[in-house]
Image (cartoon, rainbow, N blue to C red; front, side, top):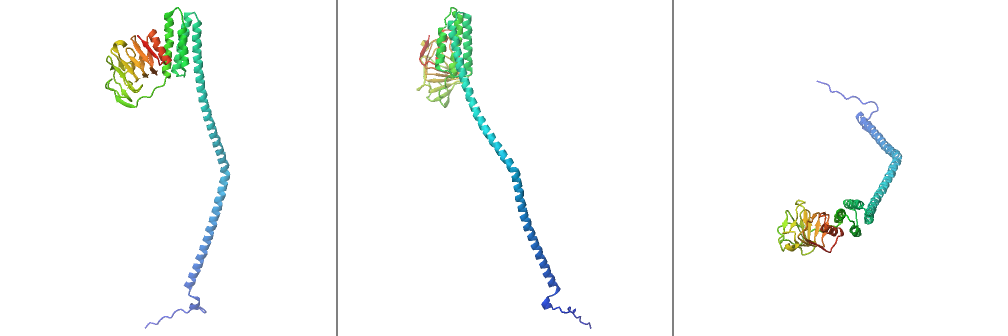
Length: 339
């Protein structure tokens, strides 16, 4: 029979109830150690955070100390650039005004030169000299037209008057040179005239007897007007016939013949746009021609309150052609009848 083993005797003076066993003491020591470690770690991180914050603030102050002067300098330079741009914009605006003023002054000076040339031609007895003066005057007027330089009605009236006053024995060559000046003036005045309002409603033209006020009719071929026909709008310039889509050499309206008396055809209150228009054989009243080639052959016709806007003129070198050119140049609203 086996003998029962006895437990190891406790060390002398050790009381488990009072002092606990070894495992309990070890647990206590570990807990104390861990607590101390946690405290040390907390203190370390708190110190590290404070140091990092102080370090960041120090770095920020160093950056500010380095960058702020540069930033201030850049801002100052940007402000100066902005000020310079504003100043330059003002100078450009002033330069544009100065250029316009110079151009206007140059136009007036050119007009004065033309008038002085023609005045000198009146006093000259040499036909060749007069011919050269008239040719030069016509060329200068053409330059003013091309550049669309402004000119008042008094300039056109003065030039027409001075051209009329030039008289020489060699009437053939003289008349041709004078006609060049008249034609240049007609083209110039037409370039300066203001375009009237165009009716906005669009429609395709069907018949000269079927038109309505306030419409702009698209023309795709010549419209033939019968005898004793009166194409009229109820209000002056109240209807437009737009021939922009047909050839430049094709007339918009054509009467039966070039005789005003035989035709008894009139056009009143219309706006004609684009292509060509021969004036012969029609009584034109309260009409505006815009962007057109205006032709006169040798027939009879009448103009009353007719405007030519940005037109060119194909006129014969004779008294009738000169009268039409003068009418266009002077912007007359009175009646002129030829034939």
